[in-house]
Amino acid sequence: MCAKLLGIEHSNHSNVKLWSKNVFNSTFPVAFANYLWKCNPPQKVKYVTTDANFNIVIDEIGVDELFNCSGLKAEDLYFSFEDVFSPYERFLEGGFGTTKRLRRAKKIDLVVKHFEEGKEPSNYENLRALEIKMTVVPDNSTINTPNDPGSEIVIRPTTTLYAALGLLDQCKFPKQFADIKGTLHDIWITLNDENGWTRNAALTENSSKMKDATEQICKKYFKKQIPLLLQPIWKTNGQDHELDKEHALDLIAWSNLAYVKLFLTKVPNAQTDDPTACRAARCLSKFIQYLYAGSGNSDIDRRINLKFIKVPDGYQTDKELSVNGAGTREFIKARKKHGGYNNTYLIPRFPRKILHSIILEDGQKKLKPERRFDQSIYIMDKTGLYDSTSF
Image 1 (cartoon, rainbow, N blue to C red):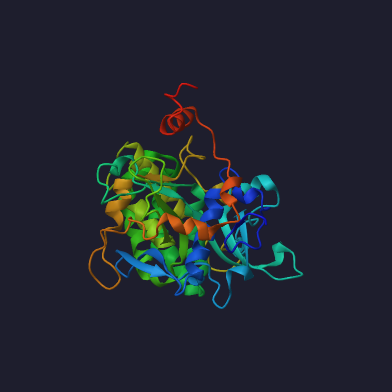
Image 2 (image 1 turned 90 degrees about the vertical axis):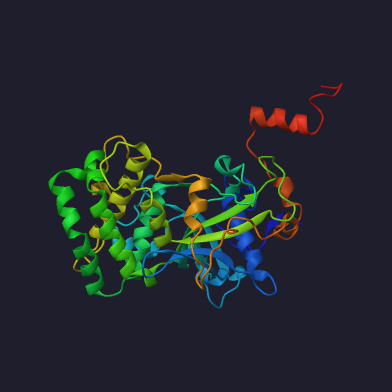
């Protein structure tokens, strides 16, 4: 029998590549989601979202809703890893590009498609675009609070682009686009006139105005938010390599507006040269530019030319955002949808034994993790080899 990951019957990756270095961090979470979906009764994914006041709401979402595939099963889906979400091309000048180089920078970790026998994958219906961030708890910032852990999240620039495109795609009427553009107009004019998009000082100086305009949009269009970020978490015993026996794994999804809320909390309220604050302000400035350019008066005008998105010199390829475990922990300690507080959100629900139901036919033997010198010494010590007579 061939090694398998649960529910991944159709994919742009060969069976061999599903287990390869770096790829497994995207393919395993999909199989984990399929496991939750196939449970009897089906288990839901934890969901970080926002309400009409742009407050964080802790909710839950079914895997079929996460994948936007009501009425389908996992076996009806095509999981396309590192791909572009073609429905969003209508908002991009020149689409996602015609060459591999142009498209590479705009790819998201997972595009869920409807598998249709006899068709080419490029012609499958695109259902959902998801960024995947597999994270461990506890991280270095929460190692001393094992009952209240947190996990670091590092975000790519692609996530901010897809957050904006997802919101624009949910708007169906010209007046909605006009409203978004009107809300952003003043701050757009201010930063354009001062060439402020390219200066960190100007961005942080105007950060309060940028935040206010963005929050107005997020409050008004909170019903338009969609899942964007899939965050599988795995818990170890302290900083050991061994998975916790009873609380090893869980799956969290973030909406695009919850992601916006996350980076807004890092944006300063006044001019500063703090590196973290400047990075968050740059992230916000790009989000605003995407929304403004994509909310024109007509379909022809609703085009984002990515060549004209401005950032300060030297930061064009900068990582978008990094929030440590202590930061994400405090961020999600918000009210549940039906009231109360959730202080155990980052404590996984599922024991490690479920791995036998997700990784099938000895698939674990196909894994080839990256070799590191410190890891080799650590494993030799843990297995007793380091101090053995045969060392």
